[in-house]
Image (cartoon, rainbow, N blue to C red; front, side, top):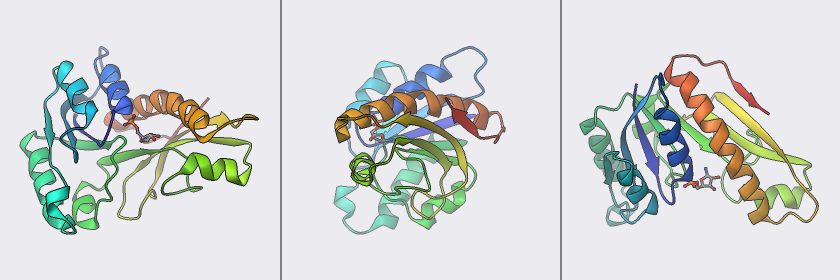
Amino acid sequence: KRVAILISGGGSNMLALLDSMAEAGHPATPCLVASNDPEAPGLARAAARGVATGAVDHRPFGKDRAAFEAELQALIAAHDADMICLAGFMRVLTAGFVTPWSGRMINIHPSLLPKYRGLHTHARVLEAGDAEHGCTVHEVTPELDDGPILGQARVPVKPGDTPEILAARVLEMEHKLYPTVLRRFAAGDRRPVWLP
Ligand code: GRF
């Protein structure tokens, strides 16, 4: 399976996926790392690993999401991708982009979905006083942070946690969960992954 990975920033999840796909016998190979931000630091990190990169700056398109998504789709199609991994990709994608990729696009979200869809999940968990938190890999549907769950990983919330400390603990688990799910998903196995 040829995988296109979409990022918006540092791309730590993207790097974890690249490292995993470099292992012998992995059913997937990265064909593109692309971003909505041409300056995304993850692009240089992907290029340093010999992976093709690209960017479609979303800013010139203003509110015209469809025009931005048409460019992004063209870039992905030009690299013959079979599936997409969203990894710290911070743009909402419309049904026009998502639907043709139905069943072939997955995302990682830093919460135990269906709790805490959207942004600032770590602060919201602390605000709520939850005892545990975590991350979820799910199939992407037009509904934000919705879609069939492919895996979850749990971490404890600890006394004195700040959003930053908690985010770092979750991110570490993201780097374990996402590669585990991708390896299964790329082999056509949709059995969910539960960590630890
Ligand atoms: C992090 O907040 C992560 O939880 C979420 O996207 C953000 C950036 O991740 N998935 P990355 O380092 O760019 O993969």
